[in-house]
Image 1 (tube, rainbow, N blue to C red):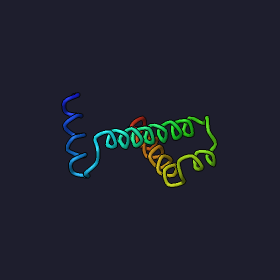
Image 2 (cartoon, one colour):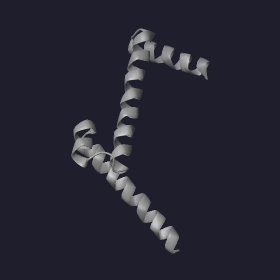
Image 3 (cartoon, rainbow, N blue to C red):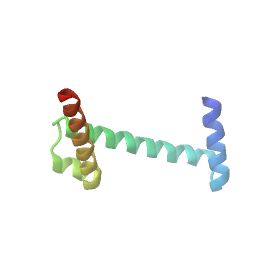
Length: 83
């Protein structure tokens, strides 16, 4: 796994003409952003965070998408329970 990551970083760095350290930095930032959004949306969907605060933290489109995904899952679960 470590060799695969190293190979990918090297390939990205060469393709983008960037130092490998910058590729790692960008990957860390992107990963942290994803983890942050997941945390905010989970807290919102669990009722621990108000909708408006979630929107302020991650944006309206992400909150609305999370709501739509939850509705689909709930609909599927209800269908499965009634089948």
